[in-house]
Amino acid sequence: MAFEKLIVYQKSVDFADAVCQQTESFSRGYGFLVDQLNRAALSIAANIAEGNGRFTKPDRKHFFGIARGSVQECVPLLELAKRRNLLSEKSHMELKSHLEEIGRMLSGLINGLENRES
Image (cartoon, rainbow, N blue to C red; front, side):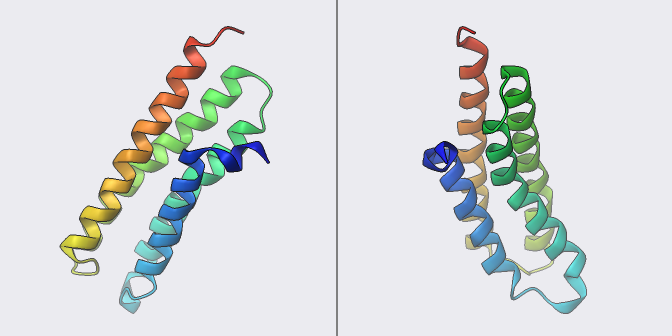
């Protein structure tokens, strides 16, 4: 599939994988946080893939926007994990840095769609 060659897609799958790895060690009472964080992380890559499967620019833009929203959703979830000592400061900063990069790339993808001729 063509979307698999997109760097932003590859980075978002890497991010989801890193989140899965980190959340495996979360304490038992934080299943709600594990579930929400994993869903939000995976949603980024899933919506990039779905957006690339759409035929119209507005549809693609919509799904890329959802992916960008999922990036934002991960921020407070990671913050709570850090505050609850489920994530080290280093892991938190690394994951957040990846999110910031993915967010910028998604904004570029959306802006590119807006600027491209039909």
